[in-house]
Length: 254
Image 1 (cartoon, one colour):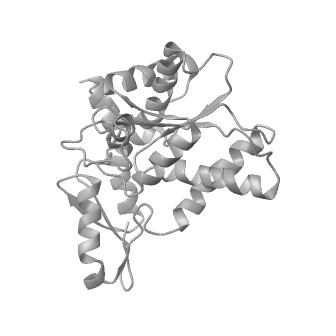
Image 2 (cartoon, one colour; image 1 turned 90 degrees about the vertical axis):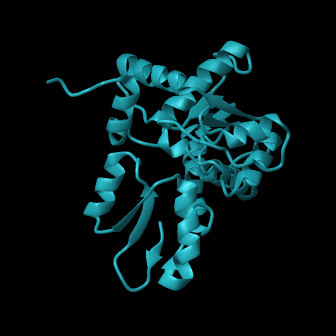
Image 3 (tube, helix red, strand yellow; image 1 turned 60 degrees about the vertical axis):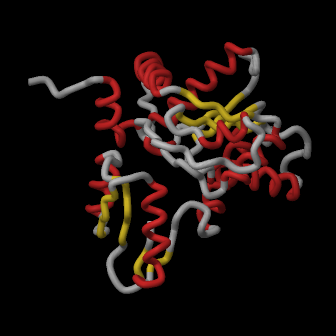
C-alpha cells in the first residue's frame, strides 16, 4: 500500500478483493482506488505515480520492514518446537515474503547458536492452479518465474501473477530440498470444508491450500504421517466470507 506524505493513506486494490479488506481500509480512513485488474496492476500504478504523488511504496519486498516482520514467524516456529526444526514447512505463496523471512530467521538462529546447524526444514511453497507462476518455474527448472496469464482463484492472496522476489523463493525451495505445488480451487474448497467440519477451524482459502498440499504429499509418499510438519494459515476465514460463499455456491436464504 502506498503512503502519501501529505494526505491520508492511499491504497490500490483489485475491485474484486474480498469485501472485508475493502471495508477495513475504508474504516481506517484510507483513500481507496479500485483497479480493474490484479495486484500486479495495482503495483504498476503505484510505481508509475509514486514520484508525482509523493507516495512511499510499501509493496511486497520493496521495503525491508516486511521481511523483518515475517521473519518472526521463523523464530516463533522454532521456539515453540523446542528449538528444533520441523521436517517441512508449508507456506501459501503469493508474494513469498513469509517463506523468505523464515529462511532468513533460520540462518540467524544458527549464527546465534540457538539452533544447531543441520538439516533445515523442506520449504513447501503452495499456490493455486489458477495462478501458479512459482510452481511452474520450479517444475521447469527456471531461476525466475514468468508472468501468469489470466490469473483466477478464490484464494485471493495467491493471485499474484509474477512475484517480485520469485528468484529468492525458487532458490530457497531448491536449497532446502523442498517443492512448489499448485492446488486446484476444488481441492482448496474441499480441504477448507473438511477442516471447518472436523476441526472447527475456518481456514482462509490460502491456508486450505496448504492443508490440501499436505494431504497430497502424504499420498505420494513425499512425507510420512510421522513427520513433524508445520503449515501456515495466513488469514482468517471470516475475512473471505463473500469469495468463499461464491466458491461454495452459498446464498443468503430468502
